[in-house]
Image (tube, rainbow, N blue to C red):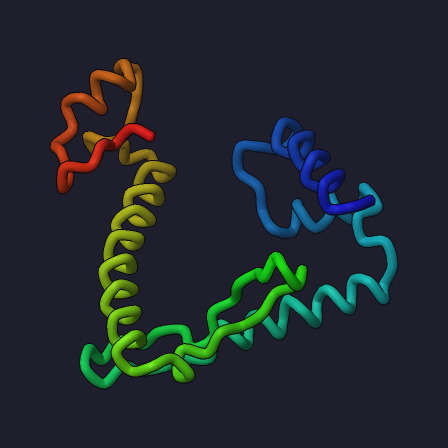
Length: 153
């Protein structure tokens, strides 16, 4: 069973056991569906995942902002058909400083979104940007403009 079939079968799990699932339930489901084809395949995948976890743990501390940033960033190279890691310490200083500034700004925005989503799932649906029974277009039209950019995609 390939990844696409496993993901498709997870829809059944969501219907059957949702709305709250644990990692253990997902692992058991994949195992029951035969998604872990062999111990060797599972071991190789686990080694890759553990290596990625360690790569995410390597940090760079920016002296100007005292911000800790992931040092290795994963990206997929479509020409070579594989994943690589870029080391931000190998970047020119000015480019790395710009990256760290942009990262810090994005990190603040992402924290706000994650906090709001966690609050939403905890039942605290009191933010204006949550669409409830109201018409979505009315909510989007009444939202304040941000930097002249449209909120519609």
